[in-house]
Image (tube, rainbow, N blue to C red):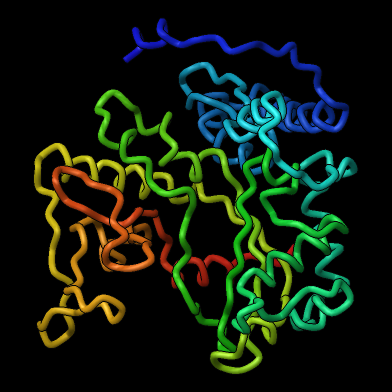
Length: 351
């Protein structure tokens, strides 16, 4: 509740000084919005301005615009930027890669990714990993599932590390994903969105969808997708070829995300959430191979119900740290259907 803000304890303060690279990115964002508004003012403002967030937000790194017309729009800093500012202030032991100072706008980012694609598209990950000495397998002999991320970070920054250590991606809330296509162009897997669902927020009736972390990927985030292609069906990751990059804005699924949020809250608030047995096609219960325990799952919306759905993730059937209305469950995430992503990616040009 709002009154609880009075109980917050101040731990310190920071008179923030913007770094030049950050100031340039703010200016580039501001300029994009200014040009859109100038054009809207010359035409029919009531026709043009409702498109502000839809057309402009995907072009912005640090800012977005809120609320929707006819409310007077305002700038706001992305939550990802403010979070990183706080992390830098608190010095939480992060080890960031040097910032890509020359990338001062979304347009410059797209051009940089285009350059990488022009140089390396069509090469297998194992070919790209070789000059950097990146391991193709883990110490236990298993396939290195982080190989694509490690390769992209090297190509993008010239440094070793993870996407979570690239300042531009962290501050701009850019989500990095890989999408592996079959030789025929079909999908190979659904895509999980992070972080896991915040159920304290979801179960709080006072939280509005627009202000929730649930909505953030569909409002604040742009997804950079490294498209990989199998050389043959079910080939190992290291032999998949990097085809290039495409940029997705998940705002197109905002209405679906709102419907999913409302549907989950209806189940919670109406006490209709149940732990249902997971059945095989013949109607018999499925059993987890590791524990021998019959599989169960909450009756959240499934992939058959829409483009967005909810699925849990855990190490085994006993790893159920979340309890809602007495129902124990894995950590839950929102997922996007792979068929939907493959279809959208097919319609998008490579950068």
